[in-house]
Length: 263
Image (cartoon, rainbow, N blue to C red; front, top):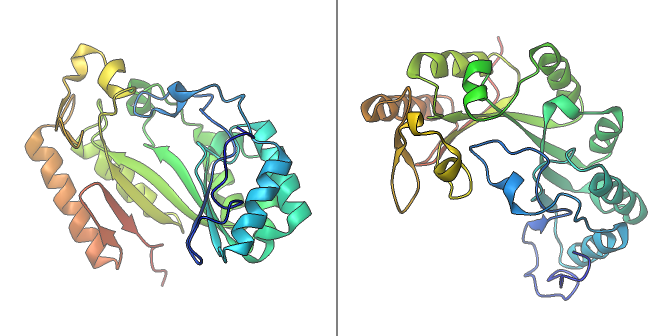
């Protein structure tokens, strides 16, 4: 990865654009709804010199915030070490924004220290569902005992958004609505994504009983185990109303909710 040309180091990026950085490939997990774990070995990482050169190129281009396009900030120890070293050596992130994902079960004190030193850190916590039975259908786990403690720690150092998925196989409208309401009880933003059937994910890894029906072009889920087409459409309409009512955003594939107002 160190040999890949950097458009930032080459001065090809228009000034003022958001920076996009990838420090490693792949993911150690193989959740059925996601392609990250099937792309490439997560052992392929950028060294700290390469990351530092990217930061220097971004600084020259007037970049004020960086989107970390990795599976997660804390899912590759070597890549995180190199990112931290480059950030310390260049000071690039100390007055800038960083947008990243984290896996809540593997947050360590050094990740929290790193985020605390960012000018403005925005962290997505990809929970997908609070229901272990639903997560088991898509090869994902959830550490109930640790989640709230980890969330409190992250909220102390970053702007946090919980992320869940609408339309997962094995879920249903009642369970999803409970998950949605529970997510809105936390002092964080919420992002809800409409399930899509990705080629190296649900498209090839779902068992027949998941009964997937999806758009062949957009890959958007129409119906599946636990979801009729009408039920999925009703829940999507509910999310759109709630997003607008709360001052968030509604789209065809995602809904964004700001942190709930507190009395």
